Every structure is written in structure tokens, then in C-alpha cells.
Length: 103
Image (cartoon, rainbow, N blue to C red; front, side, top):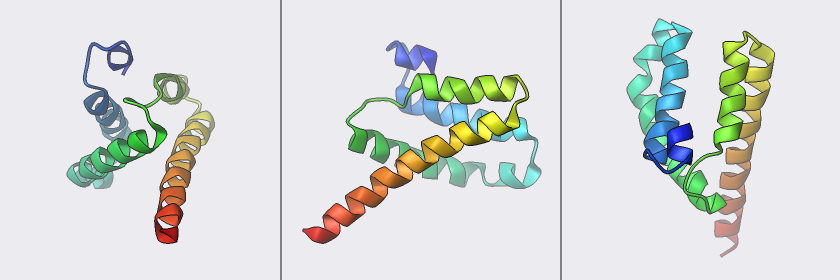
């Protein structure tokens, strides 16, 4: 994601790869069976939320916080930072849906 943030890689692919790497690192066989579904969902969600935010790529620094928390074994920090990103995406989508209903 850092390379993408610096313009040297595709930001969407880097973001998806980041999330799929975490999925693989979990070692959870059940979740790994959902890899294709997760990739498709991320592809749509990331494109849409980045468009709504008016950015080309997701926040490298926010994703780095998740990475750092996982690397240091701080599950609570990883959960909290992940939740912040999820809530931001949910709020963007909810706001757009409400705005669309009003039209």
C-alpha cells in the first residue's frame, strides 16, 4: 500500500491485497473459503467509498496502524482501527443512500 500511496502501484489492488493478506494470516480455514467473495466485496466497496470520499486510494496511514497493531500482537488496537475504517465506509454509504432517497 505504501508503493500505491507513492504512485508506484495500483491503489485498489494494493488495498485488496492488504485485506486478503490479513485474511490469509488469520489461518482461519472457514474465512479462507470466502476469499473470492471477500475480494469481490472489497473491490466494489473500496471503489465506491473512495469515489464518495473523492480520493484515488485508501488511507495508507490508517491501514499501517492496523498492520502495526497486528505485527505487535495488539489485537484490541487492530480491532479498534479496523472498526473505525468500517464505520467510516458505512457512514459514507448510508449518507449516499439517504441522499439518493431524497431525490
